[in-house]
Amino acid sequence: MSRVRDAFADGKAFIPFVTAGDPELAVTEELIVAMAEAGAALIEIGIPFSDPVAEGIVIQEADIRALASGTTTDKIFDMVKRIREKTEVPLAFMTYINPIFVYGSEK
Image 1 (cartoon, helix red, strand yellow):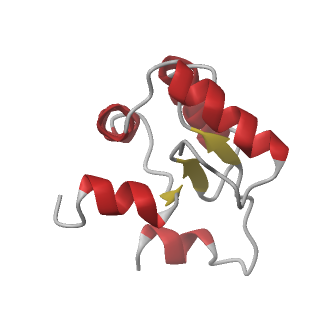
Image 2 (cartoon, one colour; image 1 turned 45 degrees about the vertical axis):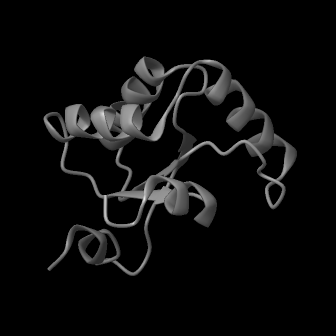
């Protein structure tokens, strides 16, 4: 069974969300590990985007702060590698198609 499927084994799941890099990636890493230790079944990580028009003001402002702190997709992936050394909680990314297109789906 996959980690995500396991997260829903009880029919419900606690799934917190955090924007990567808000206020900086070191804090995001600490928050994700703490969420896992607190019982999160799955954690959603927002990849900041420069024009998050489909989001509410809270996520828009988090994206702006994250980008201002120098957060990049590569740095987020490096953070996830470090997190994997500390927890096996399932992680899911929330993003727009634009960053995936620019980054390259093959990569």
